[in-house]
Image 1 (tube, rainbow, N blue to C red):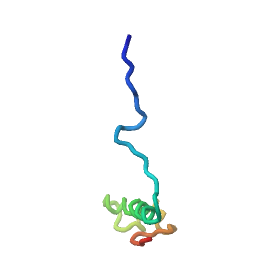
Image 2 (tube, rainbow, N blue to C red):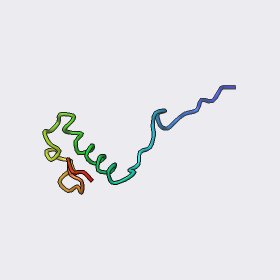
Image 3 (spheres, rainbow, N blue to C red):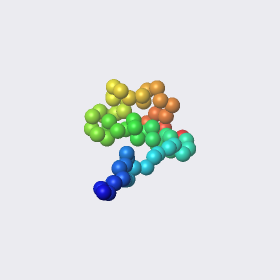
Length: 64
């Protein structure tokens, strides 16, 4: 009889993330907006064609 291996859908180091409060939300939005800048793809978040930074309630640098 063959031993059955447990198979996982997620990697072992996976954990869920949820927004805990307004400050965490602002940090998450800022992180998303700054990703293309940090990757060197654009000079500012507003330059990224697919960004929601212009219509966002939390613009880069704004703190809640």
